[in-house]
Image (cartoon, rainbow, N blue to C red; front, side, top):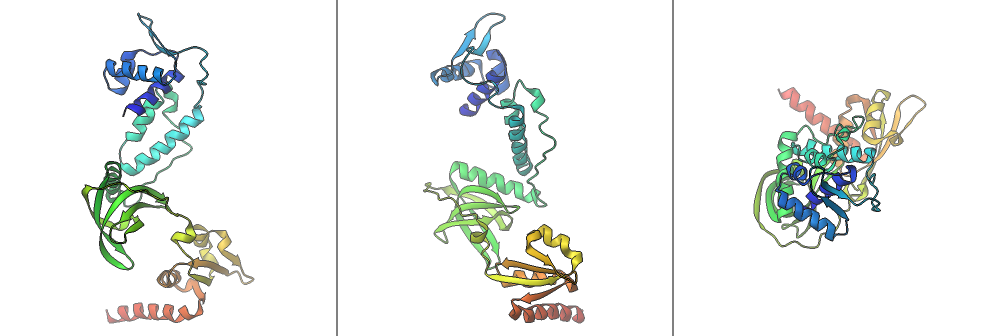
Length: 302
Protein backbone atom coordinates (compact mmCIF):
# COMPACT_ATOMS: atom_id res chain seq x y z
CA UNK A 1 0.00 0.00 0.00
CA UNK A 2 1.13 3.54 -0.73
CA UNK A 3 0.91 4.79 2.85
CA UNK A 4 3.02 1.86 4.14
CA UNK A 5 5.62 2.50 1.45
CA UNK A 6 5.81 6.22 2.27
CA UNK A 7 6.24 5.45 5.96
CA UNK A 8 8.97 3.00 5.04
CA UNK A 9 10.75 5.60 2.86
CA UNK A 10 10.58 8.17 5.65
CA UNK A 11 11.89 5.62 8.17
CA UNK A 12 14.86 4.85 5.93
CA UNK A 13 15.64 8.54 5.43
CA UNK A 14 15.52 9.14 9.18
CA UNK A 15 18.13 6.42 9.72
CA UNK A 16 20.43 7.08 6.75
CA UNK A 17 22.03 10.25 5.49
CA UNK A 18 21.21 9.62 1.84
CA UNK A 19 19.71 6.91 -0.38
CA UNK A 20 19.17 6.62 -4.12
CA UNK A 21 15.85 6.27 -5.91
CA UNK A 22 16.92 2.95 -7.51
CA UNK A 23 17.69 1.60 -4.03
CA UNK A 24 14.23 2.57 -2.79
CA UNK A 25 12.58 1.16 -5.91
CA UNK A 26 14.31 -2.17 -5.41
CA UNK A 27 13.60 -2.20 -1.66
CA UNK A 28 9.87 -1.65 -2.08
CA UNK A 29 9.57 -3.57 -5.37
CA UNK A 30 8.12 -0.67 -7.37
CA UNK A 31 9.28 1.47 -10.27
CA UNK A 32 11.51 4.55 -9.95
CA UNK A 33 8.60 6.64 -11.21
CA UNK A 34 6.49 5.41 -8.29
CA UNK A 35 9.28 6.31 -5.85
CA UNK A 36 9.54 9.78 -7.40
CA UNK A 37 5.80 10.29 -6.92
CA UNK A 38 6.10 9.14 -3.27
CA UNK A 39 8.92 11.63 -2.69
CA UNK A 40 6.80 14.42 -4.20
CA UNK A 41 3.91 13.41 -1.95
CA UNK A 42 6.16 13.54 1.12
CA UNK A 43 7.32 17.02 0.12
CA UNK A 44 3.70 18.14 -0.26
CA UNK A 45 3.03 16.71 3.22
CA UNK A 46 5.68 19.07 4.60
CA UNK A 47 8.76 16.84 4.76
CA UNK A 48 11.67 18.85 3.25
CA UNK A 49 13.43 16.30 1.05
CA UNK A 50 16.48 17.13 -1.07
CA UNK A 51 17.32 15.32 -4.30
CA UNK A 52 20.84 15.55 -5.69
CA UNK A 53 21.73 14.25 -9.18
CA UNK A 54 25.02 12.66 -10.11
CA UNK A 55 27.19 9.78 -8.99
CA UNK A 56 27.13 10.76 -5.33
CA UNK A 57 23.57 12.05 -5.44
CA UNK A 58 20.43 10.72 -3.85
CA UNK A 59 17.52 11.62 -1.61
CA UNK A 60 17.95 13.01 1.89
CA UNK A 61 16.13 15.01 4.55
CA UNK A 62 17.15 18.67 4.78
CA UNK A 63 19.79 19.17 7.47
CA UNK A 64 18.40 20.68 10.65
CA UNK A 65 14.84 19.56 10.03
CA UNK A 66 13.01 19.27 13.34
CA UNK A 67 12.20 15.51 13.10
CA UNK A 68 14.59 13.70 15.39
CA UNK A 69 16.45 11.00 13.49
CA UNK A 70 16.26 8.83 16.59
CA UNK A 71 12.49 9.15 16.87
CA UNK A 72 12.44 5.33 17.06
CA UNK A 73 15.21 3.98 19.24
CA UNK A 74 16.71 0.51 18.94
CA UNK A 75 14.59 -0.73 21.84
CA UNK A 76 11.49 0.82 20.24
CA UNK A 77 12.11 -0.95 16.95
CA UNK A 78 12.85 -4.26 18.70
CA UNK A 79 9.62 -4.02 20.67
CA UNK A 80 7.68 -3.40 17.45
CA UNK A 81 9.43 -6.34 15.82
CA UNK A 82 8.53 -8.63 18.72
CA UNK A 83 4.89 -7.64 18.35
CA UNK A 84 4.90 -8.16 14.59
CA UNK A 85 6.53 -11.56 14.93
CA UNK A 86 3.80 -12.57 17.37
CA UNK A 87 1.25 -11.93 14.60
CA UNK A 88 3.29 -14.09 12.24
CA UNK A 89 3.03 -16.93 14.77
CA UNK A 90 -0.74 -16.83 14.27
CA UNK A 91 -0.98 -16.37 10.52
CA UNK A 92 1.78 -18.83 9.68
CA UNK A 93 3.38 -16.30 7.31
CA UNK A 94 6.29 -13.84 7.45
CA UNK A 95 4.35 -10.85 6.18
CA UNK A 96 4.70 -8.79 9.35
CA UNK A 97 8.40 -9.53 9.74
CA UNK A 98 8.86 -8.51 6.10
CA UNK A 99 7.05 -5.25 6.79
CA UNK A 100 9.32 -4.61 9.76
CA UNK A 101 12.37 -5.35 7.63
CA UNK A 102 11.29 -2.62 5.24
CA UNK A 103 10.65 -0.17 8.06
CA UNK A 104 13.99 -0.91 9.70
CA UNK A 105 16.00 -0.84 6.46
CA UNK A 106 19.44 0.60 7.05
CA UNK A 107 19.57 -0.66 10.60
CA UNK A 108 20.18 -4.36 10.09
CA UNK A 109 21.22 -4.85 13.71
CA UNK A 110 17.55 -4.47 14.65
CA UNK A 111 16.39 -7.38 12.56
CA UNK A 112 17.57 -9.93 15.10
CA UNK A 113 15.12 -8.33 17.50
CA UNK A 114 15.11 -8.61 21.25
CA UNK A 115 15.60 -12.35 21.67
CA UNK A 116 14.84 -12.06 25.38
CA UNK A 117 11.14 -11.57 24.58
CA UNK A 118 9.55 -14.28 22.45
CA UNK A 119 5.81 -14.10 21.84
CA UNK A 120 4.00 -17.02 20.24
CA UNK A 121 0.23 -16.58 19.97
CA UNK A 122 -0.32 -19.87 18.17
CA UNK A 123 -2.10 -22.76 19.86
CA UNK A 124 -2.40 -26.53 19.71
CA UNK A 125 -5.02 -25.86 17.03
CA UNK A 126 -2.73 -23.74 14.84
CA UNK A 127 -3.28 -25.81 11.68
CA UNK A 128 -7.04 -25.25 11.84
CA UNK A 129 -6.97 -21.82 13.51
CA UNK A 130 -4.67 -19.94 11.12
CA UNK A 131 -6.92 -20.43 8.04
CA UNK A 132 -9.90 -19.16 10.05
CA UNK A 133 -8.00 -16.03 11.09
CA UNK A 134 -6.93 -15.38 7.49
CA UNK A 135 -10.46 -15.83 6.12
CA UNK A 136 -12.09 -13.67 8.80
CA UNK A 137 -9.42 -10.99 8.52
CA UNK A 138 -9.92 -10.74 4.76
CA UNK A 139 -13.70 -10.72 5.19
CA UNK A 140 -13.46 -7.85 7.68
CA UNK A 141 -11.14 -5.89 5.36
CA UNK A 142 -13.27 -6.40 2.23
CA UNK A 143 -16.66 -6.17 3.96
CA UNK A 144 -18.05 -9.65 3.24
CA UNK A 145 -20.39 -11.65 5.42
CA UNK A 146 -19.32 -15.03 6.76
CA UNK A 147 -21.44 -18.09 7.51
CA UNK A 148 -20.42 -20.88 9.87
CA UNK A 149 -21.62 -23.59 12.19
CA UNK A 150 -21.20 -22.70 15.85
CA UNK A 151 -20.85 -25.22 18.68
CA UNK A 152 -21.72 -23.88 22.15
CA UNK A 153 -22.92 -25.31 25.48
CA UNK A 154 -26.46 -24.43 24.40
CA UNK A 155 -26.21 -26.51 21.24
CA UNK A 156 -25.25 -26.30 17.57
CA UNK A 157 -26.45 -23.43 15.35
CA UNK A 158 -25.96 -21.92 11.89
CA UNK A 159 -24.84 -18.29 11.90
CA UNK A 160 -24.38 -15.53 9.33
CA UNK A 161 -22.40 -12.55 10.60
CA UNK A 162 -20.80 -9.27 9.57
CA UNK A 163 -17.19 -9.57 10.80
CA UNK A 164 -15.51 -6.48 12.26
CA UNK A 165 -12.68 -7.33 14.66
CA UNK A 166 -10.49 -10.28 15.61
CA UNK A 167 -9.58 -10.29 19.30
CA UNK A 168 -7.02 -12.27 21.29
CA UNK A 169 -8.15 -12.46 24.90
CA UNK A 170 -8.04 -15.02 27.74
CA UNK A 171 -5.62 -17.16 25.67
CA UNK A 172 -8.19 -17.56 22.89
CA UNK A 173 -9.15 -15.90 19.61
CA UNK A 174 -12.60 -14.33 19.20
CA UNK A 175 -14.59 -12.62 16.46
CA UNK A 176 -16.53 -9.43 17.24
CA UNK A 177 -19.33 -9.19 14.72
CA UNK A 178 -22.97 -8.42 13.97
CA UNK A 179 -25.04 -11.62 14.18
CA UNK A 180 -28.09 -11.81 11.91
CA UNK A 181 -29.79 -14.40 14.12
CA UNK A 182 -29.50 -12.30 17.29
CA UNK A 183 -29.75 -8.96 15.49
CA UNK A 184 -27.02 -7.63 17.73
CA UNK A 185 -23.25 -7.63 18.18
CA UNK A 186 -21.80 -10.86 19.48
CA UNK A 187 -18.47 -12.40 20.43
CA UNK A 188 -17.72 -15.84 18.96
CA UNK A 189 -14.82 -18.12 19.89
CA UNK A 190 -12.94 -19.17 16.75
CA UNK A 191 -12.28 -22.70 17.99
CA UNK A 192 -16.03 -23.32 18.10
CA UNK A 193 -16.59 -22.08 14.55
CA UNK A 194 -16.65 -24.67 11.76
CA UNK A 195 -17.43 -24.76 8.03
CA UNK A 196 -16.64 -21.09 7.45
CA UNK A 197 -17.69 -19.64 4.09
CA UNK A 198 -17.48 -16.16 2.57
CA UNK A 199 -20.82 -14.65 1.66
CA UNK A 200 -22.13 -11.51 -0.03
CA UNK A 201 -20.84 -7.98 0.77
CA UNK A 202 -22.48 -6.00 3.56
CA UNK A 203 -22.95 -2.33 4.35
CA UNK A 204 -20.78 -1.45 7.32
CA UNK A 205 -22.56 -0.14 10.40
CA UNK A 206 -21.37 1.79 13.43
CA UNK A 207 -19.45 -0.65 15.61
CA UNK A 208 -19.37 -0.29 19.39
CA UNK A 209 -16.31 -1.44 21.30
CA UNK A 210 -16.85 -4.86 22.89
CA UNK A 211 -17.00 -5.02 26.68
CA UNK A 212 -14.18 -7.47 27.37
CA UNK A 213 -14.17 -7.08 31.13
CA UNK A 214 -14.15 -10.38 33.00
CA UNK A 215 -17.38 -9.64 34.95
CA UNK A 216 -19.22 -9.04 31.66
CA UNK A 217 -17.91 -12.05 29.74
CA UNK A 218 -17.61 -14.40 32.71
CA UNK A 219 -20.22 -13.21 35.25
CA UNK A 220 -19.79 -14.73 38.70
CA UNK A 221 -23.17 -16.37 39.18
CA UNK A 222 -21.99 -18.84 41.83
CA UNK A 223 -19.52 -18.26 44.65
CA UNK A 224 -17.61 -21.48 45.16
CA UNK A 225 -15.74 -22.62 48.25
CA UNK A 226 -13.78 -25.85 48.26
CA UNK A 227 -11.17 -27.66 50.33
CA UNK A 228 -8.19 -28.57 48.14
CA UNK A 229 -5.30 -30.85 49.07
CA UNK A 230 -1.90 -29.06 49.26
CA UNK A 231 -0.32 -31.01 46.38
CA UNK A 232 -2.62 -29.07 44.03
CA UNK A 233 -1.43 -25.63 45.10
CA UNK A 234 0.41 -25.22 41.77
CA UNK A 235 -2.84 -25.71 39.90
CA UNK A 236 -4.75 -23.09 41.90
CA UNK A 237 -1.91 -20.60 41.38
CA UNK A 238 -1.80 -21.30 37.64
CA UNK A 239 -5.56 -21.21 37.04
CA UNK A 240 -6.82 -18.60 39.50
CA UNK A 241 -3.85 -16.96 41.22
CA UNK A 242 -2.49 -17.08 44.78
CA UNK A 243 -5.29 -14.80 46.02
CA UNK A 244 -7.87 -17.52 45.32
CA UNK A 245 -7.02 -19.61 48.39
CA UNK A 246 -5.73 -19.50 51.95
CA UNK A 247 -3.67 -22.13 53.72
CA UNK A 248 -5.51 -23.75 56.63
CA UNK A 249 -3.91 -24.96 59.92
CA UNK A 250 -4.06 -28.58 58.70
CA UNK A 251 -2.24 -27.65 55.48
CA UNK A 252 -5.27 -27.90 53.18
CA UNK A 253 -6.18 -24.99 50.90
CA UNK A 254 -9.49 -23.15 51.29
CA UNK A 255 -10.38 -22.10 47.74
CA UNK A 256 -12.86 -19.29 47.02
CA UNK A 257 -13.78 -18.04 43.55
CA UNK A 258 -16.70 -17.10 41.30
CA UNK A 259 -17.96 -19.42 38.53
CA UNK A 260 -20.33 -18.76 35.65
CA UNK A 261 -22.23 -22.04 35.47
CA UNK A 262 -23.07 -25.16 37.43
CA UNK A 263 -21.52 -27.64 34.97
CA UNK A 264 -18.11 -25.95 35.18
CA UNK A 265 -18.17 -26.21 38.97
CA UNK A 266 -18.96 -29.92 39.00
CA UNK A 267 -16.45 -30.94 36.31
CA UNK A 268 -13.73 -28.77 37.88
CA UNK A 269 -14.18 -30.35 41.33
CA UNK A 270 -14.27 -33.87 39.88
CA UNK A 271 -11.07 -33.22 37.90
CA UNK A 272 -9.16 -33.29 41.23
CA UNK A 273 -10.32 -36.81 41.99
CA UNK A 274 -10.29 -37.26 45.79
CA UNK A 275 -8.05 -34.17 46.13
CA UNK A 276 -10.92 -31.69 46.43
CA UNK A 277 -14.19 -31.35 48.35
CA UNK A 278 -16.91 -28.87 47.40
CA UNK A 279 -18.19 -26.91 50.39
CA UNK A 280 -20.36 -24.23 48.76
CA UNK A 281 -22.83 -24.09 47.08
CA UNK A 282 -23.82 -26.95 49.37
CA UNK A 283 -26.78 -27.88 47.15
CA UNK A 284 -24.33 -28.88 44.40
CA UNK A 285 -22.71 -31.58 46.53
CA UNK A 286 -25.43 -34.05 45.52
CA UNK A 287 -24.85 -33.14 41.87
CA UNK A 288 -21.16 -33.94 42.23
CA UNK A 289 -22.06 -37.30 43.77
CA UNK A 290 -24.54 -38.04 40.95
CA UNK A 291 -21.92 -37.11 38.33
CA UNK A 292 -19.34 -39.46 39.85
CA UNK A 293 -21.92 -42.23 40.31
CA UNK A 294 -22.88 -41.92 36.65
CA UNK A 295 -19.26 -42.46 35.65
CA UNK A 296 -18.99 -45.40 38.04
CA UNK A 297 -22.08 -47.08 36.62
CA UNK A 298 -20.83 -46.65 33.07
CA UNK A 299 -17.56 -48.42 33.85
CA UNK A 300 -19.33 -51.16 35.81
CA UNK A 301 -21.44 -51.95 32.73
CA UNK A 302 -18.33 -52.43 30.57
